[in-house]
Length: 159
Length: 159
DNA sequence: AACTAGGTTCGGTAATTACCGAACTAAACG
DNA sequence: CGTTTAGTTCGGTAATTACCGAACCTAGTT
Image (cartoon, rainbow over all chains, first blue to last red; front, side, top):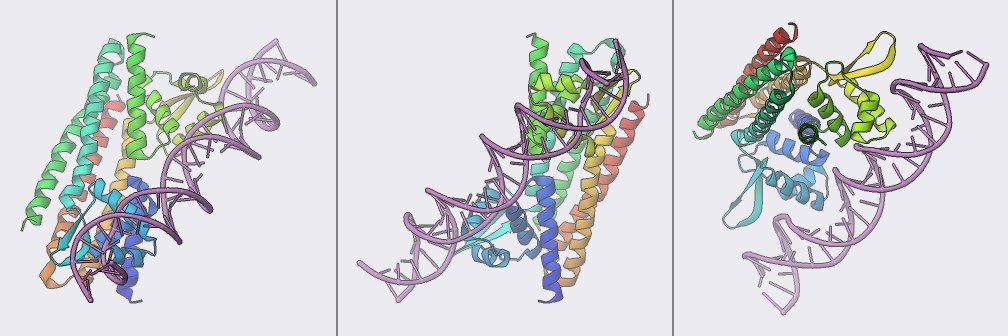
């Protein structure tokens, strides 16, 4: 195995572990997405490429590919006269949308909490309310920040 | 049950689901942290409070409390002449550190990817490299942003 | 029509996780 | 010293998840 191949394997593993740890992916889902990101072949990787490079069964690869498709982490393309599907990670900006969704979720939660606090907190102990409001401000800014990044990414993607 | 109690239960559930979904907590861990956040009693909640309001076993509550302590999501206090532990969520700013850690992780990953790309990408297809660099910029800014929020939170917390 | 390529679906197993009750410990109280 | 309080530890079970092989399907190809 070449040095490059070894490094690529290390990177796939790194991404795999990251997706397991922070995004609650199954090991195989993590490795598949890792593969697609690291390889980042202009054409994309096929089902069989993944089966052989990851040494997993067809059924597991199929299941996990469909899962990743459903949650919008990957896409596939086909070419006329070729039945194979060529898988790629979704665009950077699309993947960022997931993050955005979590922030939007949190925004709603914060609102509910503030509502609740307003009903229940005595005048004395506003500290917790004040903290939540700092956090609310953070969430709102964060949403803007994410949207800005998404725009920047889209700009480069559409070149 | 009063309206307030019902709403509180709803909020605990909301937090519970959120922590399960985005932070990969077990159901009970999520509910415990939810309880502590929503109740946010000045004194804190005791082991028995949690056992009874959540209807879980002592052993499960014990295990999950220790887990949450270990990962820094909660803390406990004791009062002289009282053997009970009073549990509270860790400070907002401390909990935010977790987020920060993930960003720091990502920063390293991005560096490794850029290294790899520089070795392997032909001059023609710099698009992917350029995208990663946009993302790198995002991560760096994000780290700063998080640090700023943490500072703001600390300011309010230390009042 | 039979075959092949490119997957998908189904049924099952192995591993992991979540939770429980019962027994235990350690500190404080009487 | 015995008892109570406040939890912890241990062993086991139930539920869930991850993965597999085998059978199947569907669109071309021969």
